[in-house]
Length: 118
Image (cartoon, rainbow, N blue to C red):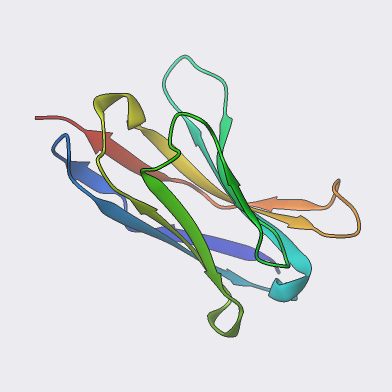
């Protein structure tokens, strides 16, 4: 059984930081590209950041310079360090695993809420 379990969300003031974690089980973690997506109320889910099996990273323009994605294959974990948070970063953040040889094979976590507000 595949599980992706996110943690680290919460309420933070504008300008603050949070670190999201996602721990995977039931998959060969090193064979999956890992991503963080988010969905704000009334909006579509969007890609925030992605890290490939080889360690290459990409992120959306809206978070470039503020968010950093990383992975630890030994821990089956992917992280999202979020700095200089803004109210528009408020959303449910989801962890995603995409098999490197078949993009249709994907798994999602249950999501963790991030709220940026004073």
